[in-house]
Image: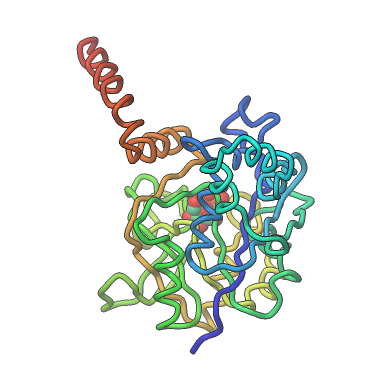
Length: 297
Ligand code: G1P
C-alpha cells in the first residue's frame, strides 16, 4: 500500500488579465459555469477523489474564495425559515467541512513552481495532489479519482496528460513517454515546459492535474527561473524524475481551459446542455444563431 493522497493544493493567485474587466473586482476562479464558480468544480473533483484537505494558495483580492467555501450562516438560516430545502441542502453538500481548508498567500507572482512551494508547510511530508483551477474536467469519474486509481497501483508521481494540436505545444508543459508503452497509464521519460514550436518531444500536454511526492518541495526551494522567466513546476518535476518514477494518465473525460474565453464559453455550453430543462431553452436559440451565421456567410 502506498501512502494515501489526502491533501490537494489549488493555486489561485493569478490575476486573470485575459478576462478583464470581468476580473477587476471578481477573481477569475469565481466566474460562473452555469450556476457555480469555476473553483467549485475543481474542489468537487478533488473531494470526489477522496481529498480531505484543500490548500488554496491565494493572493490579494481573493478573499471571496474563502467566503465561498465558508458557511454562510445567515443565508442558511433564511433558507431554512423559508423552507427552501433544496437550495439549503445543495449549499451544505458543496461546502467542505470546518477545518478542512487552508489558505496561504503567494505574496509575489513568481510562477507556478513558487505557488506550489508556498504550500510546503501545510502539506508536510506526504504525497499530495495539485489541481490547476483554470482547467475543469467533465468526466463520469473525477479526473483526479482516475489518477488516484493509477497511483494506488504504481505509487510515485502521476500526471494527467492529453493530446494537443502540434501548433499549440508551445503553450503547455509537454511530456515524453518511455519507449514501448501501451495503455492509458504509461511511464514518462522526460518533460519540458512550453517548448518552442517544432521542438516538442510529443503532442501530449500536461493537463493541470498532478500527484506528487513531497521531495518536490526541496527541489522547488532551489529552482531557478525557466520558461517565461518564472519558477516552473515542470523543471523541478524533471529533476525529481532522476530519483523517482512518473506515470502519465490519459484520463477519460473532456477538459476545458477556462483561462481562455473560448474554453470558458465551451464549458458553459457543455454543462448547460447536460441539464435537460436548460437544454430545451438553449438548443433552439443556438440553432437560430447558427442559422443566421450560416446565412450571413
Ligand atoms: C501550467 C503548467 C503547464 C500545463 C498548464 C495546463 O501552465 O505550467 O505545464 O500544461 O498549466 O493548463 P500555465 O497555464 O500556468 O502557463
